[in-house]
Amino acid sequence: MKLSGVEQPTDLERLETAFAELSERGFGADFDVAWRCFTKGDAAHETPRGPKGFLYSYAQAYADAFFAEEGWGVAEQPVPDSVRREIEAMKPQLMAAAGIDPAAHAETLAAIERGNLDAEDAHDDYRAIFEAWEKIGNNHSTAWTLMQNERRTRWHTLLRPLMIGWYSPDHLDEIIEVLQQNSLNVTAPQNERKVIIVNPSVTTS
Image (tube, rainbow, N blue to C red):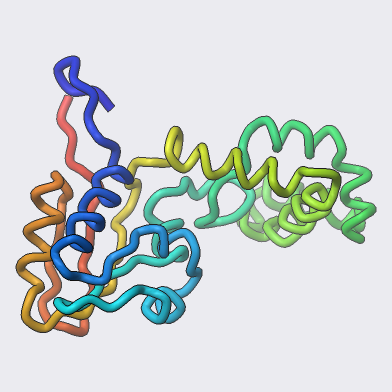
């Protein structure tokens, strides 16, 4: 992102910087947990504890906030274009390997096209096709590397609010201050039972 010719940090970079600063200030804060832990409970369990408390996000919240809804599943990182093209070229073989009935799959897609089904109704088929492709050669590591790169180069802007869990009875104001100092649009929780919300940035043309 550029503003007046100056390269600006992405939302992802701002979050990583804020979490690193909070860690230095005595909070348990590791933003990578948002990629490793799928549920809020798992993330809360894995996040390190600090003398001032801790904060975390998690993969479900991260996906909802950063990834486009269209694609091969709601709230999942879209498959890189190069991988998608390769999979489409191999689709008949991959469907056979995944045990998917081509006629049933075609009817599902036709029903989505007609508006009788939602795009997510094809999710299980596409997930199985993708997993069949991953089992070939080094495809699993190739896909992981490409998707990791695209999180930084393509899917780095908040599209929807990001939820951040926290526990810090006496230092919430400091957490909010650091997030805001990193140019993040934050909604502070009303009480300790509510999450911190990081909203998409408001931009003007």
